[in-house]
Image 1 (tube, rainbow, N blue to C red):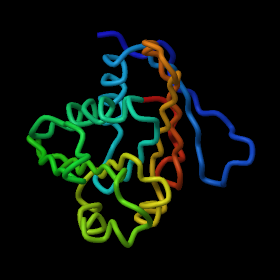
Image 2: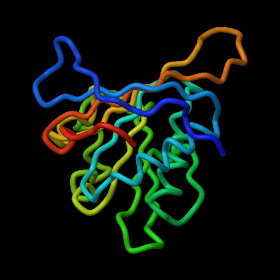
Image 3: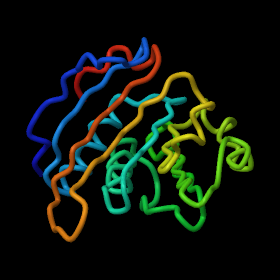
Image 4: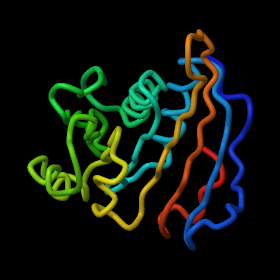
Length: 176
């Protein structure tokens, strides 16, 4: 299985908030996206919030599947669109993976409150798809993963992935 072809290097982001680090890379296939998830999992700790942004079919769940493999969690990681959230306990003594799909939730943290993410966050890795504008209040420190793909009628599997580390936790983000 081939890893993404370029290593991640921190970039100075013009106009970025203090404490923000941005890293970008190209991913050529679903297998590489899953491998990237495993690489990211190696640097995740209990209490980490990961927000995934991208169009339908961009690879958010594929990346999360790799995160689950890297974290050594139980159960197949699939899109939680209809159940909103799934908890995958660790098989290795590490943090559980809480996988949330906020696509159908309207707004803000109020609607997310019933999921008790604030209770799960300290001992788990919480991954939220479609979380922009909904879960930022859960943590001052978070990893935002933005996945861009070609739109329209195309079978192009190439994705541009941007990791944005926000807060002191991610200040050292350089390579995964």
